[in-house]
Amino acid sequence: MRAVDLPPKFKHLLVPGKIQHVLATGNLCCRETLEYLKGICPDLHVVKGDFDQEDFPDSKIVKIGGFRIGLCHGHQVVPWGDMEALAMQQRQMDVDILVTGHTHKFQAYKYEERCLIINPGSATGAYSNITTEVRPSFVLMDVDEERVVVYVYELVDGEVKVDKIDYQKSKRP
Image (cartoon, rainbow, N blue to C red; front, side):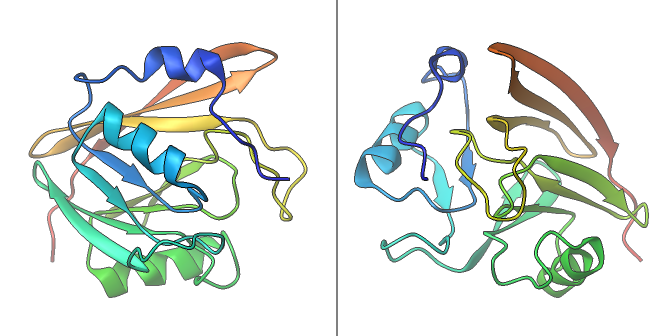
């Protein structure tokens, strides 16, 4: 079942005017969600998910700070959520950070010390046919020229849990 809305504890954290860019990996599924995200920040970048009817691109590259960040929903990358397949997508897009979705489960890892791959999960906690353990989650990134700090927000037993990942940009060959 598709979740209809963000948990109230997440909405409280996503305050308009505090976020400079919104990167969405698709499956917004309705106009209201799109408008809500635009209300948080007008610099909204969205890629098409397998349930979207809007005419979003399949993938997109955004330059923020010193990083090239690639977006794709992830249903096009087979096997879904596979580290090697996602690393291939990252190389094809030639990005420093790949943000992908589809599995609705948070994951982040450095791959071969030259890129960061992030799946922010599902902010609404939407059902996944890949796993039964879906927790609502989203990611905020603090990006500068050489470093990004990824803050992971997960709703666990009704409380927001925050973890932090620090990633230093490696020199490109």
